Length: 336
Image 1: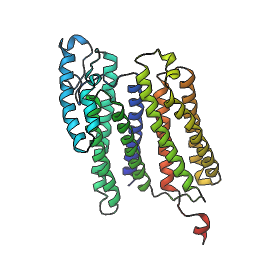
Image 2: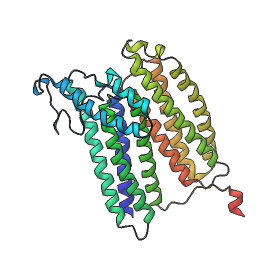
Image 3: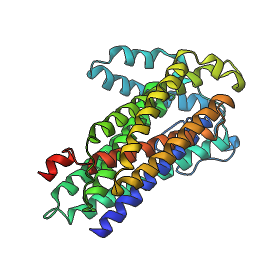
Image 4: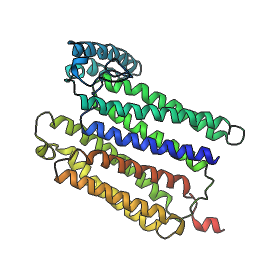
């Protein structure tokens, strides 16, 4: 069980590294550094110079992605998303091919390599969990669910690329990563046999903080979409001024997130066993707020975008661990 727990923790850390690398990919505009999937420009090791590609490489990979989008549109239509499917097939920007950029290509390639490593770790986690089937069946089932979800995440990622990073597909991809984080935290907690924390009237606050944070992350995805939009027209110094309502909502809602977390932290500090969670939330909250303020006042520095995202997702992980460990019943009920 101890080895299984260590593997859970290693996999969880690797997933957070992938989220950070994914943020770097996004902030540097490297998402289309490899126009095909799972290979990169048709090779397992990407090129380093445009001379290694055929002259008509843009037409070749645009046609490749169009074929894949036709299949993606059929899936969407099957589930009733006819309008979404139509937008993917009719939007000329979807098949737009950028000029080859070796730096962006290798940034995206590293992102994919980290993804493959995580896939192997989760496969190993499932194989390891089979040995626990007789005693801890829930761990095997959760490990299998994680393996299926990672496979789906990889499959869906291919359509994120083929649709030229269509905004909603990136958002879905992001929230699927949070689900994987949640299951891995569940596996780590259940394999640890740690005692639950009993704090009166806290469970509801943890849920409120979790809900507010997820809403704020969603608002953040809207701001990210807005940045993609204004970046096509304006210089970086003017991005914030031209984001409009999405940025105002994200900035305003951050006060709600902040207030809820401050109340939760004050409650956690009253219990000795929960003080480590309070300290972690203080540091994460402070870092997230400072990164957000810095992006607002310093023209969205590229290096701060992945840090802001990582801190928010780690906060999600801490809150989810609290949900798993805080007793739902109050202290008075337990004492009776």
